[in-house]
Amino acid sequence: MTLADPRASGGDPRSTSGVRDFAILTLLYTTGIRVSELIGIKVKDVALGHPPTLLVRGKGQKSRYVPLAAPAVAALRQHIDCQGLDEPQYLGAWLFVNHLKKQFAKQGINYIVKKYFLKAKVDNSIVADRFSPHIMRHSTAMGLVDSGVDLIYIRDLLGHVSVTTTEVYAKADAARRREAIEAVSKEIVPKENALWESDNGLKGWLKDFNKSIT
Image 1 (tube, rainbow, N blue to C red):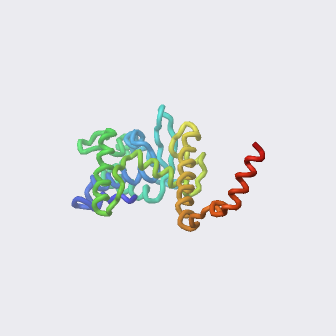
Image 2 (cartoon, rainbow, N blue to C red; image 1 turned 90 degrees about the vertical axis):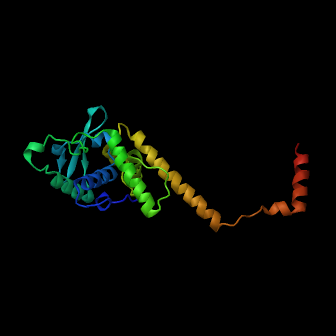
Image 3 (cartoon, one colour; image 1 turned 120 degrees about the vertical axis):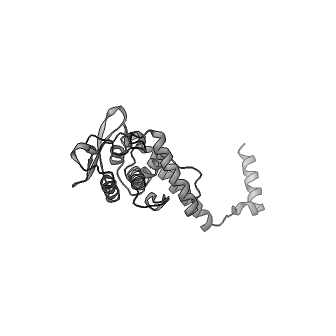
């Protein structure tokens, strides 16, 4: 699924809210972080040097560093510039704030994701009935599995306590492939009836043979 670019919707593409929303969506999709982790990010947690990384505080206040892909780096740079957050006095400030200049609540992020999903559904004829940050997280994980990324790396990236949780995505991927193979095989291999079903002589012999051994 491709969400609508918030910077190009609803007016001025240079608006700070549009740039902020684009950075939020890009970060959620490219990193697979949770909403609770997203709203807890501070400016000082973002390192856009080489290699670009993001310090994330997950469940149980366990911290981890998440690598940032080029699209996320570009989106974050633009957001930081638009908000004027590149000054030393803002290092301890929240990276993303709502219209009241306060830390986002989970509901606020859910609203942003739903808003652009609905717009994308209208503009691009998307057939999905629902979308959420959690579904984005699953999409990121499945994309990594499809690309052949090791499960241990995916576990660390998503902040799973055990690789057992991550294995769910691998099993789901295997199930998808099996369904695809079965669907294709039904089209390629025509349905065949067993030869003995039309051979009355063979069926009679089998019936007599069964009586002889019972």
